[in-house]
Length: 383
Ligand code: GDP
Ligand code: MN
Image (cartoon, rainbow, N blue to C red; front, side, top):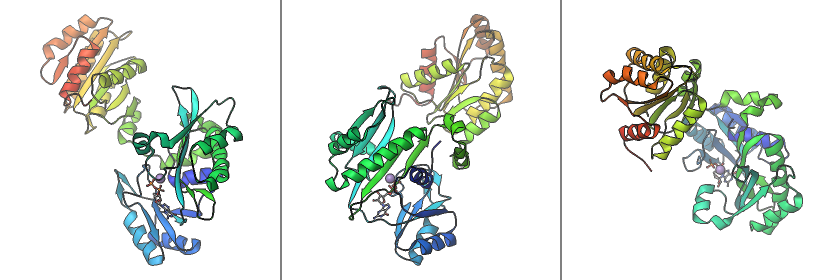
């Protein structure tokens, strides 16, 4: 569950991390009233589930009510990387001496928590990692031991922040680690973490992703459901009872069984393609389920080819083949389909499909060949 910046700041504040006083609204008049209450200058900030808002014109300083009104009306409705701004956050403007970067996330390969801290904040951390990787101080933390204040201090010193920021940074990072672990977050990121000219350290931005599987331990997290970004494809698929996850690519994937569906996504990547989705239709592959799956995939405008990868088990190959053919009569499909059918009675299934093959419906013997064919039909390998 990804939080909006203001939700992330409220989450941080509940763990004692200093953030600016502010309030969220979706209304221009209310924005001005909030700014009047807080006192100028204020910052008007777009609340969307994406970064780089500053560059996109979604973060503006207002020195008086007229400027606040102007920025609020410009930012509300603004499209930032496909996210339309419905909510803005008005906060007291801060004076900045330095901008840092701080985060905690899970390093899956190390099986440890990873803290990252850099004196080069304010820019995207990916850019720092590429151009000046030495500017990022990293710390691995064993969840059993936790983060000790001594280790935290060493880490802060390694990051070469302004010495004036050391105590404040240690204090915030200890609290941030507690927020990350006790709050069951997958990611907490502060960019920029600022040093003010007065010497205080302060979180000026907040990126928080909470573990959706831990909601039962945090009933208050239900409040975030309403502001989650919606993927229309996922909603349509879930309404049909399909296990679907939307991805960014152009090869629509249909497979039976979660393991096979994941392998199918992997093999499409392996041959240089980009899957448009993960879709597990479950054990059966009858015409109803297949038609529903094809409909969901077909409604995704990014899909250029469809890869149906079925391994017959209890569901026999001829049932699968008949299901696919019947589904294709019910749904008009825009993209060419490549089928790989294997498992129980695969030969019988293939015999049923064979007379129906053409340049819109193809069949390959192996998963790898089918993936190659689908990727080629979707415009060729991208990597
Ligand atoms: P992002 O672009 O989506 O990461 O949004 P941020 O909240 O990080 O804001 C982008 C940039 O705007 C920051 O790196 C700061 O340089 C600037 N900014 C944000 N809030 C303030 C503020 O209160 N005072 C000043 N001077 N600059 C700010
Ligand atoms: Mn930021």
